[in-house]
Length: 299
Length: 264
Image (tube, rainbow over all chains, first blue to last red; front, side):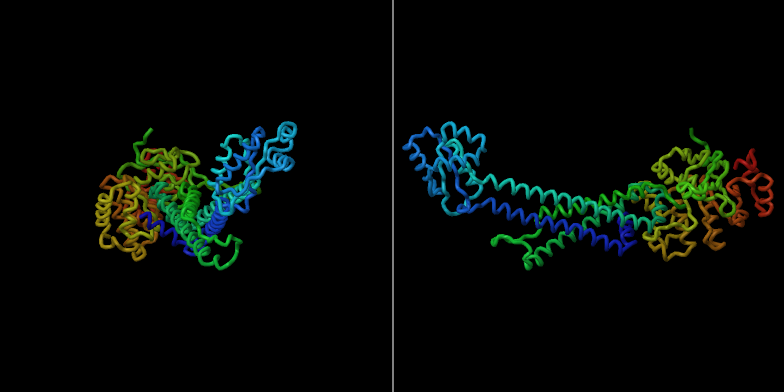
């Protein structure tokens, strides 16, 4: 019987119901589209940071204990060069080494080295090929563990904060958009239910007069919200998928790496989008609770 | 404190603000409309009572107060032992499940068929499907609508719709039935057959209160008569004059009460 009332509610204003459904789907698909772009950009970022072309890396700077004698230093270099990842290991002149130290530790701290004994600085050059992030970190740890090594400068520190800040900005935009879509969908559903409620107020008043509980009157409204959420969310996922699968690949909107394949919304994000639609619609239905709660207006 | 009466009203006033916008704007003073003035009445178990009076006399207001659809401005309404002013909206709805309510325009839900409309109050009471079915089929027999059980409400005549409305009010076996102008849209023959149906309930101990301005029905079916004029109860002399004019065979409310003309 609750289903009959729900269908009655929806069919009371078929045109409004259709337009609301479309507006919900459109709002959610905007968010879904944004998520898709973010997901793709994230893939590009991760892909480019996970696998670095060695030739593009500045190489590694190793600071070695200055007490090491020349033969001991040669033995150290030979041991490092056993690793095929490195092609050369050269001692850097004192002035250049001091500049590197300034970059590494800052002006003030590097003065300590000027006054005292300057560590021997070795520049290690990578062999050609690609290097995964994990391999890169392992290499750094191996070098740092060797006896006589004071520190290793990977020379990549300047890039990481920039990447992170972009990611955070995108995340805050996505969160803001999510909240906006949530509010819009909730208000749309609430407004539609209110319209239907007004149209059949007489029937609902009859139910109230006959003693229907608030829960029994609210159940069809809740179901209505749920239906709109499910349908709106489903339609939005379909719209986003169709847009990115069939329309965007033919339009060079983004400059992407040649090997990168643009993909549509992931399963997780699709489910999240659907869940958002359902939650927002149900929230919209809950907003109509005061109508359920008020006494019957007519006898 | 519980009341021994099915319905008891004590010095009930109900005022409405005629021009509520003026309260907000603060321009002209809002006029008060006195819908009910110091009305007192008592309905006992098994009574068959007509509530009469011209349009605008306050019949519907009085019924709304009995059903807990409105609050009094002053005085007290006790329905089925419950002080209505003290009940929450939830408790009022629960109480109304024990009252059979018949509307002038039947108020059947067009999205449901005859069977489902009658079944509705039983759903609200939380009865199981077998019990619901038993009661609905039984009451359909009583109102001679068994053959119409699966029919859409729109396909019924006005009289049939009102029969379904009465069936819906009776299906919960209420101890009180309140009918607001139940024959308003019906031809005289159908109207009489419906009132006869309600009259038969008196034998089952059910209290029936029918609001009507059709004095011929009052004359033909008798029972106790409560009259409202301009929101209050006329004095005994007026009541007696009216009784003679309509040749009502029974007594006016005032005649059976020591506070004639004041306490119904």
